[in-house]
Amino acid sequence: MELDKGTFTVTKLAKAKDLGLRLVHGGTGVERAVGIPFAIERWGPIPELHGGELVFTSGRHLGEDWTEWKVLLEGAKAAGAAGVIIGLGSGAAFETLPAELLRLAGANDLPVLTADYAEMGRIAHTVTGLHSESQRDAYRRPLELQMEITAIVARGGSFGDLLDGWQQRTQEPVAVFDRLGRVMARSSAFPSSLLTPLGKRLASHEAPRLGEHFNLSATTLEAAPDMASAETGERVEIYPFAGNDTVRGYCVRIPTGQETAELAAPALRSLLALEFERLWFLDESARRKRAERFARLLTLTEPGSARTFLRSLGIEGGPLRGVAIEARNETHAEVLIDDLAVVLAAPFIRHRHRIVECLATVDPRQALADYGLDVPTGIGTRGAPEHSARSIRQATLALETSRRAGTPIEYVDGASHEFLINAAPSDYLEAFSSAALAPIENSRGGEALLRTLHTWLLERRSIEATAERMGVHRHTVRNRMQRIVQITGHDLDGIDAQTELWLAFKARGFRDGETSPKGP
Image 1 (tube, helix red, strand yellow):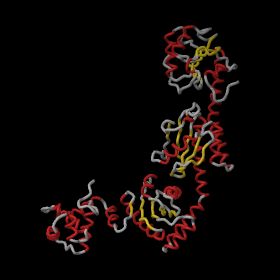
Image 2 (image 1 turned 45 degrees about the horizontal axis):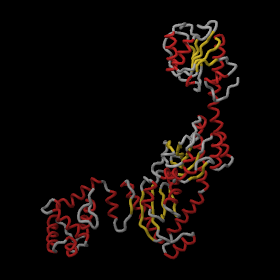
Image 3 (image 1 turned 90 degrees about the horizontal axis):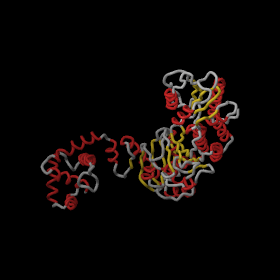
Image 4 (image 1 turned 60 degrees about the vertical axis):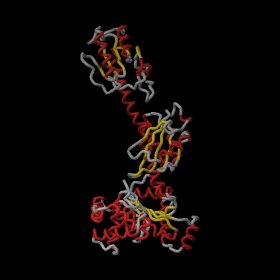
């Protein structure tokens, strides 16, 4: 029988000469996919169908009861039937199709075919076989496509070869971006005007995460006069693909809606993930070299030797800043050392298990915020290359505090108390500051006493400097300080008392240069 695979529709069945079917009414459903035959030769409602079935009937149980014929046709359409085949001739209700049945078919917009009633069994058997073959073919084609694109990779093909192979077999343009939105490869027909807007989208926080995918229009991407075509449908699909549980990159397809391509697309993403893993291992020597250089620089504490070492690598001897990050797992750490080498312009970077350490040549705070890092992070102070080891130690200390605070922590020289405050629970800080400051605060003129004490500590316990800063007479400051001693019972000349009060002010929200607590 001459019937193309993958085109099993009412129209094709009617044109198949060997079947002996005649299409008497087509309507809008003639190009629907056709399922298995389903015979109805009794009264009652149409059973629930799965969609696409061909309803066979001789009509003997209905005769010329047009009301029941109307119920049958309406019920078949409502149940999802692709069409109705009415048997004619000896043994059937009619020798020829009545005009009233043709009218009812038109009123229901349901494809109706006729056949010789004596041939109905053979036709049903043939249609069932065609449907089974079509189903097998529907699954076979994606499998063959998967095998063909896998062979491209097995033969050593590049990303570009894989994407071009996909496009040739599916007519779908496709491109691959890395985690930072940089184009890795694209098939020949992928619109170049989409690359920049897609890269910006993927580099932002709007990129899809694992388990998600985006369907975007060209209008959404603010691009693409060359994308507005019937072939592309003016849409792109963005899927992340992963190595273990971490995004490695993004596959961007311009879908055609072919079932074969949709079923084989997960295999394409898996192959891309495997290729990314392979490239990662190929770059392992470069990562090892960066780690060795990192360790070497930490041992160079003399300005001359550190700068000479940097010049030997073709790097200007500018300031560096230590960064320590606790990745979610070792796979995430491996991803970070690749990404941060770009994001932080970090030629010196390594990871030890989950901890990633690097020396950044740019300000890491904004760069890490733009990257969207959401794990504990410590940042050391900015300094000359010979002070790299010191900055890394500071970053490590800040990382310990970041774990407790749940936010990136930046080390500040001479401000270790900030780490203590960030690490302590808020209820503890409130209780601590209240215990130290509440007696002063609740006394007569308590607010002025607190501001005076805080300014006195800021001005290194100078009565004159405190008075000048507050704009009051020095005797006023001296009297207030004497009252504070009486209220608290503290010897304010002692370092322990000064430290306790200073930490209490910090916990309360007072900051250097301020004479009142920082508001929310």
